Length: 138
Image (cartoon, rainbow, N blue to C red; front, side, top):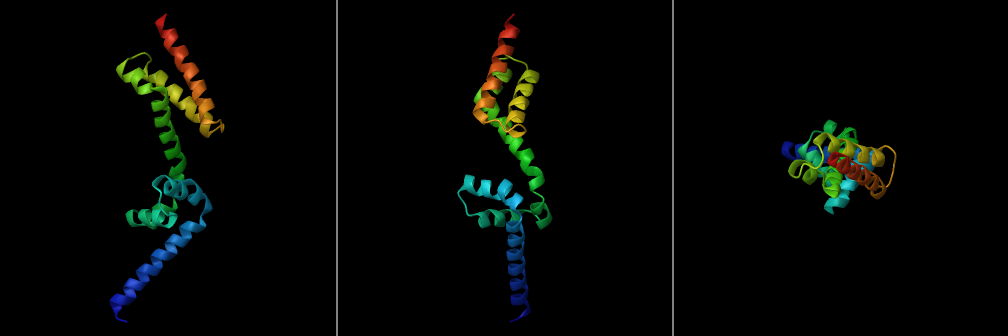
């Protein structure tokens, strides 16, 4: 073995070790890597490798700090789509952006903080939305 082979082996072993360390973090696996693997239909180790190739190890190991933030932001986008908030505010101006933001935040908090099922929370958001629309008509 020459020095290049030793370096290559070291890097490969180091990378495998990083994957194992990430895999041992159950919270990180459950909140970041397993959901992404399911969405992309990839093996979990492949997803971990993608992250490790794109970011340094410390950043990857601390991704759980962003998981809840990402979940809330993505859920907010889903609420926008499901309630048509962008249409009703940006294009048709049936409600204010402030009201839309409050409704979105309310639905997301019901789901994330109070563990309410999404459909039920969306129904409550829709009720508030309709109330706001009809209030503004008067």
